[in-house]
Length: 494
Image (cartoon, rainbow, N blue to C red; front, side):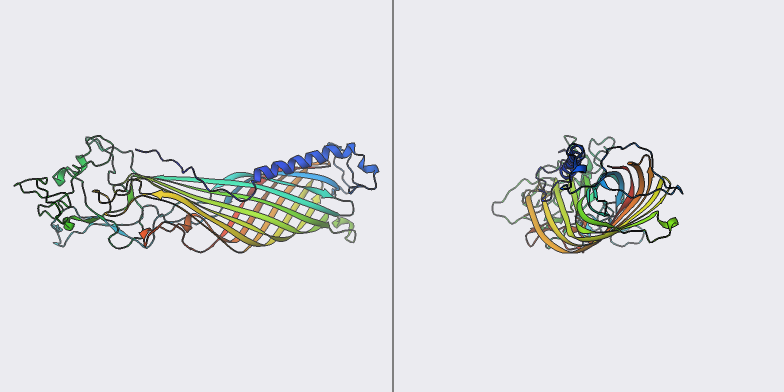
């Protein structure tokens, strides 16, 4: 049995790695923090940060006013880090063509009758085994970095780098390991993970070789114990007329194997059955990665016109640009089965959303505590990059028993690009505690909503040599994506 492995030709990504971006940004910030005191910027009127308080006294006591209300006003540089624990919504999908239902093949020439009703017994209908594949709304960890600079006049620049949750989910199904007692084989020698494909009529027709001359030996005919039915290398005589498919004629009485071959004789197509497409084991993985970067110009509104009791409320307005990426991958690997052998496909859709953004921030301080609310709205354009690579039917050999008459293995690589309007909104709610005048601890919740998103799992077209097409993309419409969860971190100001 071949091990289930991922393909080695994963598609390249066009966007900058978020981890590299966050590392670079963090290094620049530390360089600036360390270098500023040495540059004597407080005494240089030509410095862009002239007048900022950069005395590096990070652990001085919290400065409270006479009423103990505290203040969130600041100038100079700041760095904020959050460890995120987010979940991303996702619609569970069906693996296989949802409009195709297979039917089990007949292995007897006569039609059996139900002993009670007397009605013909027909092979059962076989729907797709996996009706609720990943993605699912699970929680995973990520990182977010916010940094920037405020001037004493209440203007500033804000930057944010998101190395978001890497939502990797796996799902396995199949009876591949359950040996049947006393028979030496596996519990599903024909394959029990059904995946339906849309095909042309007759594309899955083939000769069977399940027995060694007698059908009552089907589940015992596994000479090497690998769980695959060995048969006898000769097509079974399904219609019991003495001709075994394309392998000759049985003239003995009562013979079980052909003993006469007639050159040029037409095969007995009455022995054909419609094979089912099933695997003995399937492994599915869905991975969603969220990355982003934003740059905002900020203005802190004056609150001197408020009553003294309300001057612990501060309001900011922001505007700028943002890039947000949803990288979604759906990987399927099927092993074994009677008619296809091993198959794999890896589908990736990268949603690259970029556009202008506006936002606000409202803070209410009371002593060492500050309640913080941040809202953002981006009018984004989504540039989507689609890619699919894989192979299907590594065991397909035309006209061989237990395989379709004419189908053969095929590797494939597909790609496309499209775009569309994708608005994004975000809301952050935080509670901050000031340990010192320059260090705060943070705990909060973040919710991000994005529209017009493509997901990989719902974009696979399950077609098998229909008009020459093998898999590919289908347009199942866009989805709304909602990512939310907790964040905990700290903020350091200079």
